[in-house]
Amino acid sequence: MTIGFIGAGNMARAIITGLLAKNSVTPEEIVLHGGQPIHYEPYAAKIGAKAVASNQAVADTADIVFLAVAPKLGVPILKTIGPTLKQRQVPIVSMLTGVSLATLEDALGSQDQPVLRIMPNVNVAINAGMTAYAANDSVAGQLDGLLDLLNVLGKTMALPEDQFSTFVALAGSSPAFVYLFIDSLSRAGVKYGLTKKQATAIAAQAVMGSAQNVLASEQSPFDLIDQVSSPGGTTVAGLLAMEQAGLMSAVIKGVDATIAKDRQG
Image 1 (cartoon, rainbow, N blue to C red):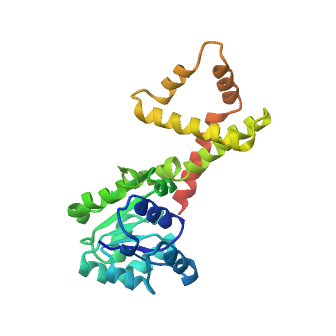
Image 2: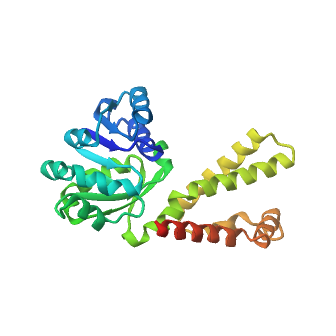
Image 3: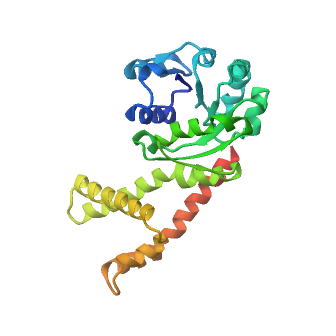
């Protein structure tokens, strides 16, 4: 199976890294094309993939095509390669932010073309990603195979398209929010004498373990807070101080701003 990528930016590379890490594909089974050769040819050579000279060449050879370009570029590209994709019945996996299945079908000139719209996050590179997806009716016979491929990268979740902006905030942008939280914990540790390296390792491990505990538990995160908090103890004191500083409100406002920006297109 040959997997094609149109666009070789950070998210495309994260997906490629995750697939190669689990030996789901070999480098020789990846073909890619990007904007300028300098942006994708050295990368292709580095990982052993095949760089091709045009989007059409990707459509001619790939069994699955990932579309990973800026949203404004996606429709013109699909209009150009659509006839080839339709003739070969190659599924298109779109990573275009804010571009609906209906718009993708219009660009392809057919509702019979298999289209899967996805929204991954950067953690797919370490096979711990979260990917939302929505499929058109024509994907039906190929959906299981496509999800098998995506599940190598972490977890997947079917979502209505009108919830994709919310997903962007909770999964796509949230790694940056979590990094900020980890760095804030780390800086507090430095304030009290730890090295930045020590403090970051402690904070990151605590966040990772806590996330795994949430996923493994049937209790809500708020219930788990109670398990860590002794009456009159240090954890309660810290939680109250964070709430007085507006931690929860700040997080919700950050999500609100992310969703609003995504909906602007």
